[in-house]
Image (cartoon, one colour):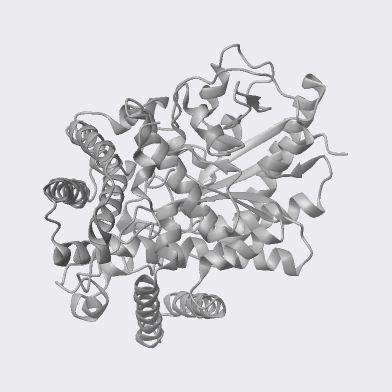
Length: 529
């Protein structure tokens, strides 16, 4: 009998970036990098665990934009070409560094890695959603949903229909792709406001996640803090993020990913190789970019990029094993302490962005692999568990009202509403009003129905929290601004054309091909509640 439980939760999300109108758009590579460095490595970990008889349990959100992009044939073809270029580059590197022993060793390491990536990609015929579903069907992976386009729900609560559309369209999309309705939801940015749980209950959702202070400041205060879920009055459960386990991974000061032996993210061959040599592998306009081949380790916090030592995958893997053991030891100690104090089995909820594992922290998937193996073979005090399974085994919990919160900077909404992005929201609110107005219209013909559905897509895409986030971080800002404006302009044109009964069929067809997310959307989801 376990003394307590650990729930590892990964949030797999990328904004919807798909540009069939252009041969090359840099932002599409966000997806290709995540496939190579996070999603396929996670699948390799899962396959290895299954092969070796480890009955692992992990929860993972797969947001509707990510699922849509992973299933898109155009993006699958582009990714295959991207991977082919990577393989060509490392073969060239092996030959170029014939007399540079360590660099050649690393180039050969990457050649093997990219070859294995290709094998997984071809094994599943590019269908990574189906690959992850296989592990859900075996009850090893619990896939949950998110907002339809990761819209920041507290900042649209004055339009309940807009919030409902984000939730219900997400659930419908999940059902289309996984065959069942989702049981849980990762609220976009873990952002909660009081009353949201009523819509989650109406959508059939059983639980959601919030940051730790969303639970700690609930009314009344939860007796067990973040180490047990609470039930809202609607019956929807709330799990809170555990601060201690999060800090060990996330913290820039003491977190594992900053260890000197791990691979340095910011030193990439695309910026360092001779220009004429690397030109075929950078942007078509000749601008340098990360190509995904990195030869150096973090070395130290004080070392500048020019002072980084060469990376060694062997020692980095050994360090990942050490860190996994340390993480497990600390969680076991935490569970043993809490169990004696609580007189019941605590649950430690450890949520992270999935892209941390592999993309930002190259050795992250190895860490997960070692963690599950050590948890399975080396101890019996703590079980890994799915959140839904914990609720089944613990059907009685304290009833409370969570506190408004997010997992962003300062814990509330400031990161998504500030001087860099505040201009967006009046336009989004006006667009929501227009969409709600459009939802009352019955279409005159098939063309008008298509226009109404496309208007719904454009509003959802404009509402993505990623655009406001990017504006705040100061990276790729022109792209985020352009995306926000383009979706709003398309919605405004559709609104005017529909009421004027003058829909431009040629223009609509073009927009449908570009913004083709949610093929089965029904604009009536915006009708007044």
